[in-house]
Amino acid sequence: MIKILVVEDDENLNKSICIFLGQKGFETTSCFDGDEAFDVMYKNNFDLVISDIMMPKVDGFKLAENIRKQNKSIPIIFMTAKDDFSSKQKGFESGIDDYLVKPVDLQELFLRVNAILRRANINVEKKLVVGNFTMDTEDHMAYIDENPVNFTTREFDIVFKLLSFPKKTFSRTQLMNEFWNPDSFSGTRTVDVYITKIREKLTECNGFEIVTVHGLGYKAVIKEWKIGRTKKMSRKMADVNKKKIKKRRIIFSLISYIFIFVGISFILTCSIVLFLQGSPLPEDFIRSRAPRTFSNIFILSFIFTCIVLSIKYYYFDRQIDSIRNATKQFTKGNYSYKIYSESKNHGTKNSELEYIIDDINKISNQFMDLENLQNSFLSNVSHEIKTPLTVIKNYSNLLESENLSEEERKNYCKVISDSIEKLNNLVANVLKLNKLENQKIVPEISTFELADFLGQTLLAFEHIWEEKNILIEADFEENVFVKTDKNFLEIVCNNLISNALKFTENGGKVFVSCFKENVFASICIQDTGCGISKETGKHIFEKFYQGDTSHKEQGNGLGLALVKRIIDVLGAEISINSELGKGSTFIIKIKL
Image (cartoon, rainbow, N blue to C red; front, top):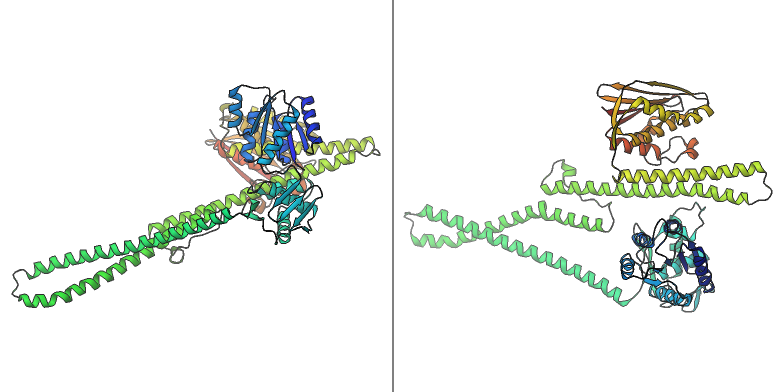
């Protein structure tokens, strides 16, 4: 069924559009502002968006621009009271496909929706035909040459989605979000298994194929003569280019030979003339020796040309070909490709090109590390979000039971509240970390006393240390003034003090101090908690790394990564000294 997102801040109008489109066989979802629409589109895939312009928080123009950044092909219709040309111009420039002015006739809206979906190749008649392959969404059946294809429901839905948007790439995450339950803990590689099964069932299909876009996902490609012709033309052009390169090399070799031949001939001729000037040798003798001399010059020129071309090939052409092949692989997304270098075996560089090759290999490694880091980050974010969502969903279902006591209801509500708070903290930390890493936040430098600052920061956690009966010791040296960003430093201290209290058992002790040390102002936060091992200490500032999984429900592994990034931005230093089972000490040093 075709999914339409309706974004309209007038509740009655929104409801009437959804009811009407529902009666026409569409599945609709209501949103009342751009912010809500962003959230809904993040969790769901839609085939079309109908939006107002004048809405609270985020208007329609900004909504369309953001949708286009994420999805180039989804159709967007503006339905608004603004009928001036400048609004229409701005709307189409932001990426919309149609513009309707209120009051809108619902029948006209229906006709426009059908027309746009048809242009987007989304079949409203609930049948999709490609070559000898037919899909009937009414009966949920697929046929190849009128022979039924035994698809499961999920396989059918995946194929229909891909064929509704031919040539558009769908990531594994997009397909997982649409066709698997939110509380499913299946990995994205599950999609690969389903695609393999689908391909096996479509071996007799001549209308399309499901293509893997390496590093991204999958797309359906319609088999057409033009596409095959284009590929053949591309291969032909590549062959022509290779022939041109070979031809240029041959011409270069001939020119090199001619230059060397002429050069040697000129030098030897001048030398012989100068040597024989005034010589008593008879002219007949000189003439008889001339052919042999010319032959020797010819042979020497050929030998020198071969030597020059060999040196050129070994030190230049071969490396250039390797660099060209590497750049082709990089453009295809294959960052694991490496260029072989003789210097790896001999330990010395034979040419400047080998320095360039080494730099390209280093760049390749950096790209691979960045890609792995990005995939790891997305995987961790997805997991950290899904877990509390699953908890919220499960406890929400439990709350529907009529046999719960009041105490159980309160406990379930507290679990849901804690999960929401964890999600809120995760999103807040991800946003802060993203802004810091992209240098979108500039420190606001001010001068303030460190003792007063730490005292106020520490008092914010009074309810925690009293609840856990933790002894707090503070030793603040007075008149220690620092010049830095106060808000940034507060985030750092909040994270470190919060961790100290979290990992210290009931009845333990936390020590906070500040003092002047040479040209630095130092902050020391020490606890008698569980401590960390040396191996954990190596990764403690990495994103989503949590050494003590027993406290996992209280954090998301971003706090210390955020601390480290802020410390770097402020130009300060941070060190850790910890022993497993005895506690940890964090020391921050700020230049005075």
